[in-house]
Image (cartoon, rainbow, N blue to C red):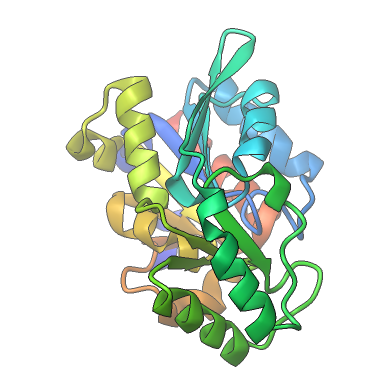
Length: 255
Ligand SMILES: [Mg+2]
């Protein structure tokens, strides 16, 4: 991992698509700052295709795909794709959340102190527990919850704020690659070289491993031991300010 200023002009110019995580990457403690939103519009105005890649619900993705200057939102850690289509939004996602009800009941009994996240009503494919948004759950307890979910045959994906349980097979990388193929016709090889990814946490690991130009915002530091492939570049600033730093560097190197 090297500081972002080491990004070369040649590499910056080869990028056609920017994939970005939302929580603690574009969003700063859950808020979209003026600076970060401005950065998104600057990339759009510079002709870059934009896709948000998030663990947040498909229902949030529908809103973002309608309102932001993005091509699509890959939501629910890859399992849901929301693409803007004219003035509407098309959704590709299974309705598989209901299958998780027995697992959720078991978790509630075994982990009474861990609450469901407040965005579950907008999800299609996963159930999400709050580990760091409204209250902080100690890391060892998060590990116990992860093991519990996995012991029931489900998958667990962890971000800085949530633990997601799902029976779907996707991760952020598979979801992003599907979107790049469906929307832009990029096969995995070309996508790897032409799409850049920026994120901050463990559920971004698959994308750090799958794309050539990968960037962590500064607050990724505590998660590095959990990433088998770290991002190649790191920003100086955290969260939305780090995202804006990336956009400024990227656009400056392209001109
Ligand atoms: Mg994040």
